Length: 156
Image (cartoon, one colour):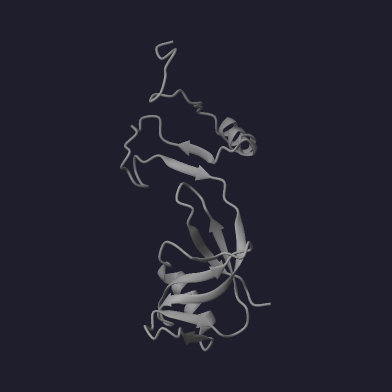
């Protein structure tokens, strides 16, 4: 084998052309702490700066969502930029990245008439004053530990 005895920074890794085997790894390695798998075309070179699209490697991560209470929004009531949430563990966090236009519209529509400006007077954070609203979020995928907004839960 050409790379026998390879040491860091080089590292051997599993590879397969079998979708069934890749799915087996994806499911079977999660309990051992493996966050997911990578997929790429056979003739695709690794480019560390490549973004999703033609020629890019794709990370397929395990994703679990949780519900968090919406405490406030940043931006304006008509164009929210992010949500201030209370997570199930009690921590208050701000979602990242900025809400997509369709998400911002969903939040603005759902919270119309239920927002009051924060006492700081800047007009950049608006507290939810109406009934408790829950947001479905993804917590801490990848290295950065961000909280990403998925959608608002329907009112109960």
